[in-house]
Image (cartoon, rainbow, N blue to C red; front, top):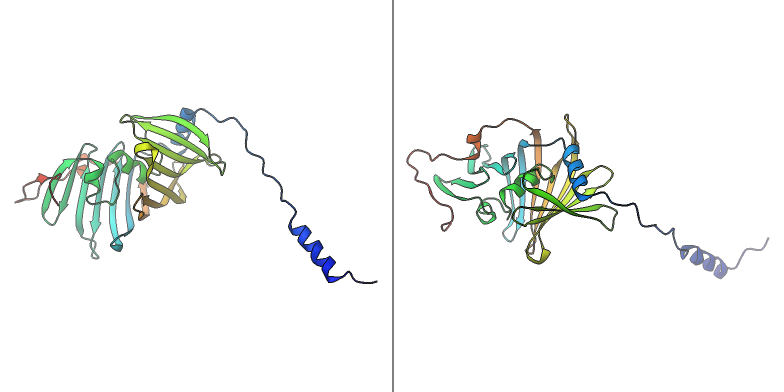
Length: 263
């Protein structure tokens, strides 16, 4: 039998390669109510209220890369404590907040001020309020305190985009996996709805009491592009913690200074 000319074979191959693939039909399933989704996220997350963990923190910015180890404590709605450690695992800098006030102890100098995003950024390269810090460490699911669901939209990848708003009018957009019912990313919006902080969650670990906790947090600060990567190690959820952990008493011979001052 005579073989087909090489040109005919090439034409057949090109024609087969140009065939359009199956067209993906958009999901037209009606979306649930935003508040329903927020309630389900909280239930699926096991109503996480507190976290105690070690963390490896890597910061990428205009001064290069900085790596450190830290002790991280968080308790809803806005209490947290961060202790950065030396190579010998001795505390270097300590920041604590009860949600309203902020304490920063560094090099035998204690400064005290409001728990504002600007003051928090003096130690953490995160321009976030205290409740946003706690929500981030607990996996992006906001607690029930002063946060309401505002809207729900379907993203281009069939994920859900749930917008929540707090009592100050600050908006956060949560990227929700509609099947697993978990938050896989969050965006903190600023003026004109511009994204000022973007967080991606990964390496989810199933918890004994239900839900999944992300052990890897990738945080991007916009528009400068600085990045903070946090790896949680042996996290403990819903542990009881004394109120004293979320404030710092002045060591002997140290006089507290205003945190809003220079430095």
